[in-house]
Length: 228
Image (spheres, rainbow, N blue to C red):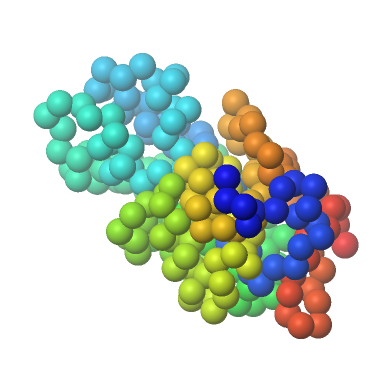
């Protein structure tokens, strides 16, 4: 674990320059859609679906498919088929509790979204959940290397004009948590969507009503426990 990452007991004493949010499972609860689409794909390709669904979150579709190494599959074609299926299915997509209100409390230019979804899918899911995309949103089609590589989070920090180490990464999946760790950011884990909670040393919350934000005169942001 990166030595610069504050542990759970220290995060409320830190001042941060910006907040970086994953989307699926972190701002938007799309777990029903994701698992419907991927379960069908797993069964069609002879993969036991229950264990498989525990290891897909937070990664780009192409990387999930490539990792499974099913003989004879065209990775790009399969990823395109997954994307089309996910684009057509927004049934049951909702926001993580308190997400929109929490984002509305943040100053403009102090937060970004970094998602493993392509931009069109991300925009469709955010709209379904009633969340307006920020000016800075790094999507799957904006990076060479997806999570757990920290490339996307680093790009977001750069676009916001802050250092990676001065950010908080909000994540729900191991791949994204590792990406935040690898760039030296603080991490907050959202634990509401997965049936198997992640064991983590980081602050873990079930909704954004558990947090508040204090905006300092110098532009810094400080997390507090509970609403302001």
